[in-house]
Length: 269
Image 1 (cartoon, rainbow, N blue to C red):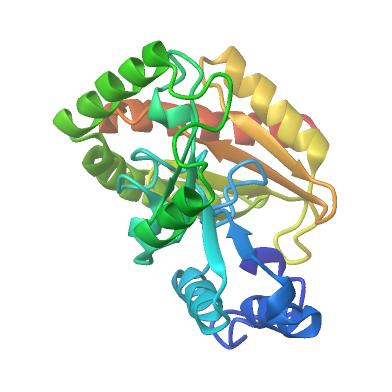
Image 2: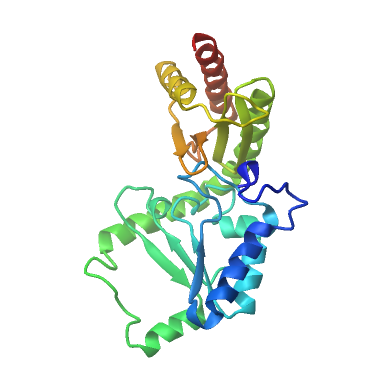
């Protein structure tokens, strides 16, 4: 979380201390007592927190060095959201296990899955548990919905659209942030983006009440987005995760509403 670094560092001069802390913890506990490292490639519910591009590469190196499994949680980022089918591809790494849900069937019906490599799969077979894991596992209706959904995602090239529209939206959001005294940072990958809402750009003090007003005023104008509050960080973040089918015209309209709501909410405080 470079904008609010726990270690008081500034990227890229930090040397990825956030990753070194994980390696130090593994060494302290001893690698023989650690099975895996679990990470979201982008923290979605916490405010679209995007790590430096090298961060996941460093986690991959650490896990390989100590013979640990790297588990990537793509419940939020999977199936095109970040501009590739999966965010691990966006960052250029390969996990040992991948957890997915939501986008796998676009919530037409509830479904989740765990994907893995041959080594882990063979290990499960050795324990005689390679076929089914739960009462509702392999549900035929859910799996049929997933197959149809994934086919549509690929045929309509939605990851590619997410990459193009995400790049366009992030650039426009940064312009909005640059023009506002109460927006601290815009960040994102593909169509998962966040904007920090602050009282002061220099102190980065979060402003929850302003954030709530911006959300309400935006909704009144026809734009809905999430507001994430990180209490441990005292952060308030507007989170944008629009449909992967979104167009440039729709983005322009959304940002026009957002910018207008920010200005009106700031004046009325």
